[in-house]
Amino acid sequence: QVQLVESGGGLAQAGGSLRLSCAVSGRTFSNYAMGWFRQAPGKEREFVACISASGGSTYYASAVKGRFTISRDNAQNTVYLQMNNLKPDDTGVYYCAAADYTTRFVDEYHYWGQGTQVTASS
Image (tube, rainbow, N blue to C red; front, side, top):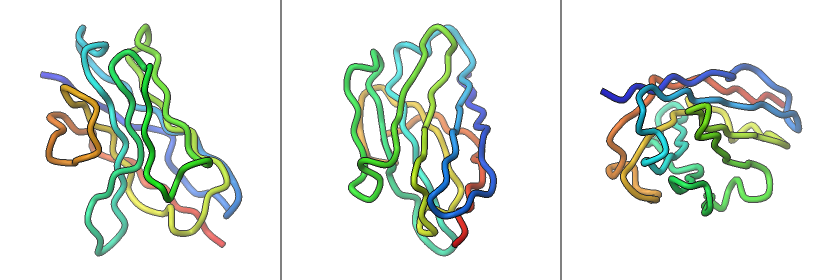
């Protein structure tokens, strides 16, 4: 019954920035840990970042540390991914997802959005 809708994807130049948003329906958003994943053509879906239900803990894939920031606003039922200094390797479809606990494993997430395309060109 939980639904997630991503927005904010698009085209950016290498070195540019994008901010993704994920709006979550329902009254229990604050109970879920949230994650961002991405999938490039021909590759498996990979972990990008996650945040605990309270927002007190965050974790990042090594490829994005120092460049991406995950955050959440529980009053707005929204999770964000601020992406700075984009690289061509960041290109892919980005998905937000909800889990019962903070985890980087794709199989532990129960609910998924439909994804939003991010393209970083050189």
